[in-house]
Length: 135
Image (tube, rainbow, N blue to C red; front, side, top):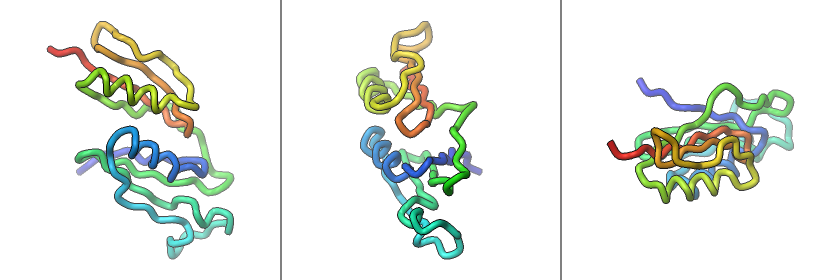
């Protein structure tokens, strides 16, 4: 059994996954647009939007899609937490994901971490960036 998040976007799934690929160093492994999905009804203007996509980061997977018009709901009650061992990488990732987004907690040293911070990216996804101190 494997547990991985499935993120829903308001028409920006492909753009978001492209940013995550560039920023996090993962790989988009699958994209299916609504126009290519054989049994999914969609409005004509939604044909180029994403019915399903998969992003791989090592052995971790994240899937995503664009909600059909009128059915999108902002994510709430969770954050994607990214754990790193390298403070410089944490700084770079936090800076990139926070561009055009909202910083909820600036990236900073805490009692448990060299760096910890929270943000909501430009696509509405909440992130926690954590770089723990060496034991």
